[in-house]
Length: 321
Length: 268
Image 1 (spheres, each protein chain N blue to C red):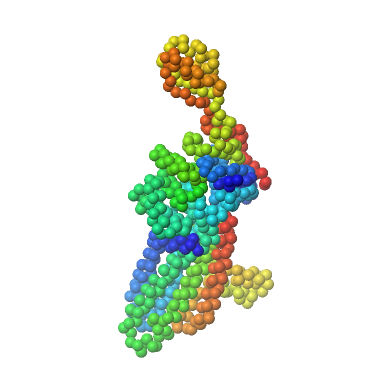
Image 2: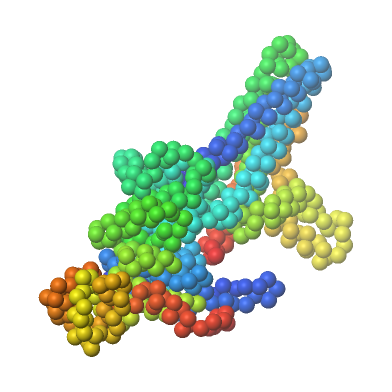
């Protein structure tokens, strides 16, 4: 049996709010997730859902009220495990009197890298993240996007087996987002495990093979995108051009609906068992040409909005006040 | 150990970048200016005054660094969240605290060493033209090695104040840490009086509280031997050693407390 790269069991965290009469507020409620080695795991949820709290628990920046968290089979917070992980916090902030190179030099020394290792890895990592000549500028002069790139550079400096990214696309322009996507895919191809929190669903859809959705501190749904019922094909959309008059008569009976896009161009929506290949063959035989054919699924966004709505409204009380 | 060294070097570099050592220029100007101004006094008096001024300035400038850098050592990292990526690296929270402390001590050590050299240089220039028979009548020689005892105790005093500031910095804001540290500093100056409280107060409860405070709070008057050294009074090596041991115990206790608090702290 393979050891999970990341595992949480009934992980909960209460914060105490209020000054005079502090009351527990449950930020995370009995979260149990498992991430296999090599997975790109999207941890999704609206603001305040408990994503950052989960990451802080995994980094042991906060301690759990109850439950357990493990990384690579060791308890979260184990110093040995930290040599094998990388972490990018949300809206990262670094020592602004240091340059990007000096920051990586500092962290490289903490990882126990040799001088030769640091000389080789630091410029290579900064190059990989697109930090150019500005690497010798003090970080106080960096834009938010450039700081995010430096944050990613320090997270991958030690060539980690597991990478934790809290809102990695935050503050990045389209070019930066493209670079980060490429980096994640490159790391995935190298067999690294990546756990990233996001509320940008298109990124998760493009990158993740497994997701979990949290809302109000609780797990709403989790699993491989390919196994999730919501993502099963629930129909087909066939778009055809140059359709001769009368050619659609035989198809209409099998279609859910037929929409005229313009002139002789039509969008034909078929049920899951509507055998689109047969319809395509019949119409092309009559002189029509194929524009597109694609399966109809719920988008991650549809699932996300529905699941979050199902969690209901209102403040969450603590389970064990 | 590697992690402690990394953090300590980072603190030292930060203080250099923050132009902490500009205070040395002020110190030099103060000493040179004072030596010119009081050069008119009777020979021997000016040397005494420069010794007193130099030791006091070493102590006060060091205190400013110890308190104002000390209160920010941890709280600034937590407030600005730079501690997040750092603590995700292979470093224990205890190593972080000890490294922070060691870094500031390194800064203070370099500061104190440069001030000591400057003080001896000014004393050398003041005394070089004074005949030997005149110098023989002084309470102590101009380049008195006993000054080093006073400076060593000033440095140990700063080591305790830094530990107090760091302790408060692990769980409170810089402003509160500054107030608490100043409070401990002021009480520490008069702490020796609490030991003899039973001579002026009859209430056994008040005496017990005063004695408790005496043992709990640092006794900073122990570190002040400036007057004795300037006037050439003997200070035994045993006194210096016992005071050094007292400082070491106090610093160890404060660092232990800081580590315990910081190791349990949630960074929300």
